[in-house]
Amino acid sequence: MKNILIISAIVIFAIFLSLLIWNYFFSIYEIKFSTSFQNSTIKTNSENFIEFYGINSFGQKLSFRNLDITFEILEGKELVNEIKKKSNKVFISTNEIEGKIVVKVNSRFSLNPIIISINN
Image (tube, rainbow, N blue to C red; front, side, top):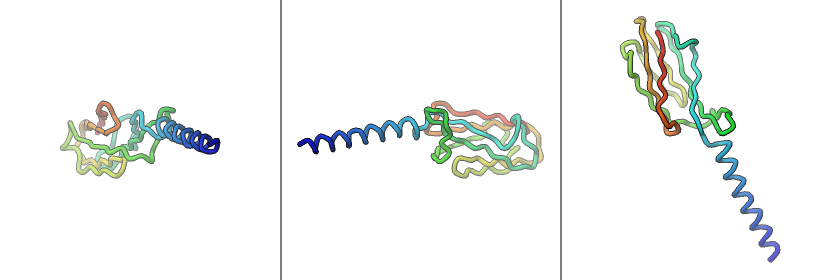
């Protein structure tokens, strides 16, 4: 009887600990991004990328989680040759026309869409 109580307590503690670890270390609380260009300005005839990553409750990157990103060009479609999505990165290939590109990014982990404005 005593062994069953000890084993039950260990199992309950292990389940509690695994739920705690999952919710605080592996759950995504926010989505942030980094870019291959500076000051929201990219050169004409170039290929650049925007990388998205999740943030856990301690503010650490969760780059190994897939964010299921969807994106849409709101402004400047004529300035973009090609957009490719690979995992959590979006590659933007621009042409020689100068202007402004506005991209809206959604994810199942974000409450609101992320709007990114890029000057070309």
